[in-house]
Length: 501
Image (cartoon, rainbow, N blue to C red; front, side, top):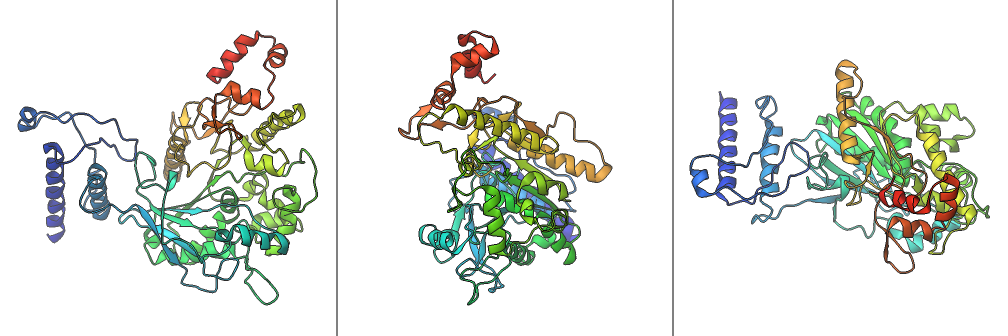
């Protein structure tokens, strides 16, 4: 009986809330689950309000209320917060800093590692994000990194709070599918692509404990509600994206070892699918920027005492550095992973010694850039869940424009929603992805920014925005020559470029 009374109380509160909304006390926006909010509409006149006839509607999930009271309460509270942004009580969207309970797991300089957390009471979905930020692979360039980028090696100056953006945002309009999840941001302070397991000692100037930091964060979160989770999405960008590929299976195995077998662990790797290709121009391996990808990982994995997934280690025994490259480690991963990758990744071009300094690129560089897109397509063709726009950029899922870029008419949040649905339905009845729900999305056009929804391009020397044609000409693209090769009129080619055809 008390349970039934509580349900009625909640319904009473919900009705009162919606009554306030209709009376004009709140500025209303229409929501349906986690989808994008619709444009504002005027509230109905008093005459229609009196007759309880309104053009405004609000969709709440009333199914199985008694079985999931906390989730229903969360829906009502979050609806109220979303509709009433100017409340007297300031809404707190920030993630708060927590240091690890296990103080022996540290950043490079021995300061305690930690994480930022924004809890969403009642939600059984958790998103753990691994920050990116390159790496260092010997004492000299680690010393230099410590002097110039100490935040990526030490927690001594971390702020107490952090505001999530993109997929870490708690605003439905910025994050339509994951806004109500428990958000966790793990700062990158191990410089080891989240792979190391070595403490700082008298012999080791720096600790490299990236893989241990992830595990300790997971253990801490189990005492803060993760033990009741249904889904854990391990996400990351750049070095954090590679970190997802290296750690998603071990996170799942850790939870299983601790008895939490019902938590479904998945991965979301953004801008971490690097290629071990030959550089455009070979240089000595002096620093992170100029060192070839294979060489820097070969040196780094020794310096960090890096740990790779067991199945990949067995596949490349004695050459474990191969496991840092997406197309090599991916086939060995058991858990579902969604890959997000710009076809013309700026970090990949940088380590390949294509430096876009504001001057038009040479013809050989232009060909190299186009070949990079082709090579990436080839390595991604057998990945079932992925989003690969033909844009020149780096990192994506925490950008505020992450909802705007589309591949074949589908945005990344929409593709991730489809992926979630397909995993849920497959776990129930082993069916294929829902119809009309694409999850394998890759651009087929051959040059950077041939996709008209790519992020805005700016001239590096002037800061001015450029359209696609200006950008391609700036990159050394010869419209006349390309039109001749394609057997078409230059003006027609320009029209196709402008429209993104």
